[in-house]
Structures are given as structure tokens and as C-alpha cells.
Length: 119
Image (cartoon, rainbow, N blue to C red):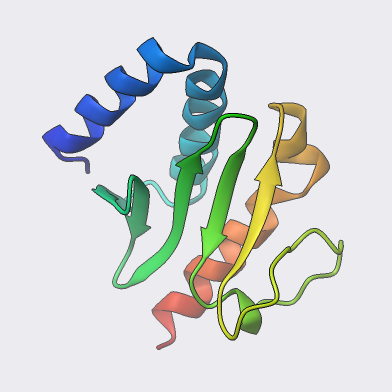
């Protein structure tokens, strides 16, 4: 389920950076494949996904797309792709659609979703 702000932000991104737009769309599709009932809203300049609780955010930057996990410190990182050294948050930087599978994004999104449901 999305709101009108999601559509607006996607339109803005498509105009400003078509390459990042395509990557954001691919990431959104991957998230919805895993969690078809997730809701999505615009926050902090990106797309925040929630089930019963928020589980990840997708943010487009000039050179990459970042998938951020608010409780990333609690996620297992068997592939060593989580970045960040803050107290809680971790993220995965994606530079191309190939990074979605190459960095095992779906594994981390699914783990973050399950973690958010257990809190």
C-alpha cells in the first residue's frame, strides 16, 4: 500500500536521475516480492517500508541507492555487506541492479522484516 507522496517522489526521481529511478524501482519490487502486504511512505527523503513495524528504508543518492535498516545492528551479516558503524543503523549500498542479488538484499530485507515483527 502506498500513498500519493510515494508517486510524487518517484516522478521527481525519474526526472532528476533516471538511472537511480530504475534501481529504486527494482529494489521496491524485490521488497514487495518478499513482503507483498508491506506499506510504504515517504520519510526523510526516501521510501520507508513497514509491516506491523518499520523494517527498512530506500534512499536514492547521486551515485548509489542505499537500503537502510534501523535495527541493522541486530541483523546477522553472513555475507559481510552491511555497512555502518553507528549504534543501531546499518545499510547496504547498491550501485546497479546486479547488486540486488550480488549483495543478497532479499535475505537482509527478509531478516529485517522478521526482526521488526518480533518487537
